[in-house]
Length: 529
Image (tube, rainbow, N blue to C red):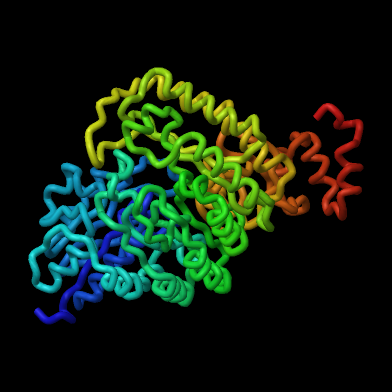
């Protein structure tokens, strides 16, 4: 068999973990690197998403069949989700050639029928196999990494969300600056050793190619801390390198993507180096698009849990970081969202947790509310034993009450603070309809779920004015509202209208302006509508 005879079927079952978002509208860097490794190994790639298979796409024959899927951080999804174990089991008989699977589902029982279950780097293992080497677990080299991201970029054109609302996650580095101390007890990044950094020029080359291929939205993610990008300080808390961050983000701004966002940050770095971190925060605020979120890894405010698990930061570190990000990034941007806000990650089930840990976390969050600060989102999850087993046994009923208290007493007032009633959110992409409600989101990092209380056309963008708040989502209507085209249900869903006033409005159409509308709805004959 010659190299040109080799065909690789690449099935994107969607990877979803902190280092690689890949559930639509995202396309992960992992699946693009697998495609690039296949091309580099002399193969032709056929890329198919699990959503296309769900809709009846026939499984092509191939020399090699590769599946990537799994979510290490369970999430809730709007219109798609990662491939399930049952779907993998049903898929296996339809696959041809030798078979590889990667992602967290490679550890599932359903994956045992694959020839290779890859847990380290699916792209590197596939490349070795195509080159006639033994298929082992290994990490890619930096040269391979950069080469494969370019060679595999073309598959974005085959994704069902291309060009909109597709958003491509782009990696900056792997590993953790705290690798010498072992890093956080639950995280596998420190096990990858010294951080392997991609240079600004290599990242920019990949991103420029994605732009040429029609990608309009990018998130610079896949790193443990964007504030530490470029730093070669591996003792304790790394000293930031603003110049390197600047060399990446200033050219990115000039590429004029519709959306340019980032991901994680270590709050201890921001707190210990406030001046250098301020320079980087200003760069991110000026170069990225509004709605950007820096997810801060606090994990716990309980000092005993922090010590036992070698966590990133103390509560004092986190509070200082939240204050600084708010000071620099809280100005509202042109799309209606603040330019840059912190997010917060909390993990339950870590070693040394007690009955008081949840209360300690809630008291910390209440201080944020009291100080009139803003947090875009709080991610609360149970620890997964991907690195070790944890001795703490989680009481599910207590955990549920803990989450509910945060949603009601922290998230709800925070959401009203960030997006008051009357805020116009621009470029909301309408994605799905459920029970007469149209749901949409702005494209980007941790987008806010927006419900429009009537049925309207999806797969398009519109502006929305906010009318009501939930705990973690909001309600709004199209802005400007199409009063002369909307149907009865849409008009009656408007605040303060009801069906009687809606009927009156429909009879009075076309309505020329707001003054004329007010005369219609102020009619005393329908005052009790």
